[in-house]
Length: 184
Image 1 (cartoon, one colour):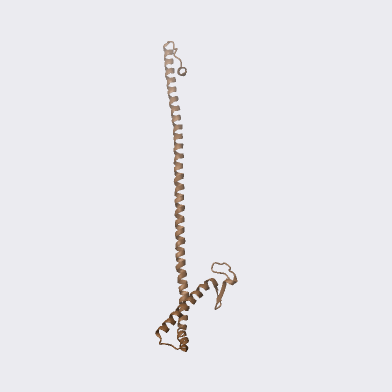
Image 2 (tube, helix red, strand yellow):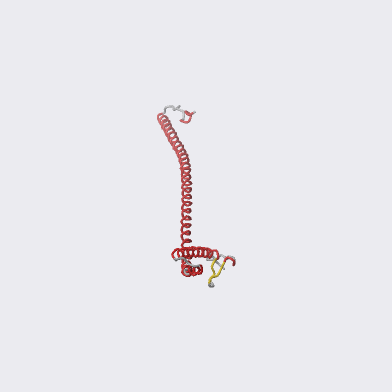
């Protein structure tokens, strides 16, 4: 036989009532509750009969006890499956609620861990970004310095060349050294 989940259980775990296959482990609860209900109701009925009845002779006691057996069995036959199923539903609802709570807590933990990892990555990324920015700034500063140096050197050469050409045009001797020779 297969249960509702498609699992094949052993034949010994299944019973049959009116030709309907029923898992025995599920039937056990019904029988226990039914038996306990019948026993309790019969005990209550016996106590009530004996307390309410006049003094009975020994041969009157069995009919007094068994007089309410049929209504008791019918009541317990209806009551026990309902009570078992109601109890199973309550327990299942509680179990599902606890499972959802555990999943929620687990999800919350995962979200917190993910958030911490993201913050850590952002912090590391910021530090890396800052370092890259500093390095780029240094490189840009060096390049600007080189450009300024070239511009100054070119300006010095243009001025020297203009002075040299002016001296040659006027016929004066020009003995000023070129700009590069002053650096040494």
